[in-house]
Length: 517
Image 1 (spheres, one colour):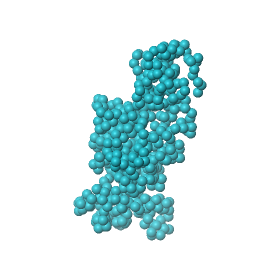
Image 2: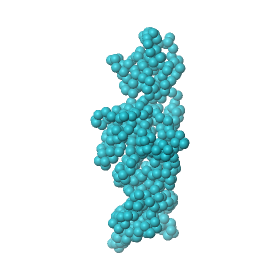
Image 3: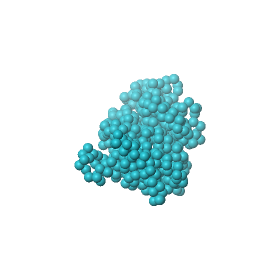
Image 4: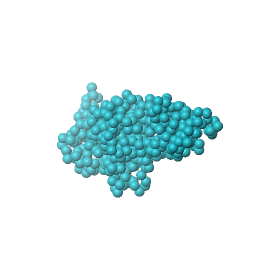
């Protein structure tokens, strides 16, 4: 970029600058040299700091706020938080001496706000007692504790094979319309149904206003808004608001973490966040790198996601769990932004388009999904019964291609394929129907024990539901124990297996009758 000197400025701008030199408050006053596309270039604010808020005078005598992103030798680049229509070259700019802040605290629960904490739900201003800066330093190594408590999603495929723990960062990744948001929403709903103390923070980055409205309506219907904060931005909002949204949501979630409480934050999605940042960076004349993203696009996501943590007991033991969402193009997880975020997070839940169109929903790819926290984030009840589940499914996927040659297979391989088919059917789960711990344990035990080997694959969920009902009717104490996360003893597992065998007989009989017919 060519250097801007006084000689290149118009006479009007020179006069404006000279006028400010002779006035009071010289250090905190500058002038706009050029403006456009939501970016103002300002001369004369040598004391401005990164992310500092400046007030720019409008033609009608008002002021528009902007925040500083570029710090050059002779000028600064500031990004508008509002419209730039009322701003012209020569406008006066003053330092406010503050960085961007958002209201935080329990007053935000149940509200829909924008990234600056302004209400979008028509319920009046947020009467918060505290505010946090959008950018905060992530907790250090000594301030953290290892992930050891589960965040139950209520989705059996995740809780049994790819568990999420408090303080973890688990990426949800997949093509558009494969059910990424559905997983996040079900997790939020499950917190309410299981009666946990986790506060949900949902950050919509550039999501359609109709989609956000439908989501809020659904959360209200489920009674989940009572423990949820929604930070919403739409595609119509300027890029700076889309860029700020995740940081604002994170600051709101951090208040709960810092006050010995627990929060779950969903970034939907960070692909749009990276695009907004790219737009701002290109307008600020920053050199583009791979896929035209600026060189520090990795850093903006790492400094955001590192703020999710499980704090040590000395600091109250609060936690902030992050579920970032990334949208891929044609399943390409090796693209720039997906690989960046995969390397920052503690695992990923990969959703495959082909599975989705086969009717396997949630369309989770067992082979490509992983939790780097593993069993540490599971309850003992689930951990004790789900050990072989992932292996069985992976083996089934390998053998599935041979299923068409079933006549040539030995009995063991045939049984393995049939059990894999039943497990696949079992893990199908409709949206808005999260399962309790006791339900998940019952379903897994009943299927992996071989009790359902004679049940038709398409009837497996019905058989599992009947088994759970039988266990509830006969063994209420066992159900309570499992829901508390306590490991079931061998005799208790036998009670589940016996109930499953009784149920299986009725379904197997139906199968036999059909064959005879």
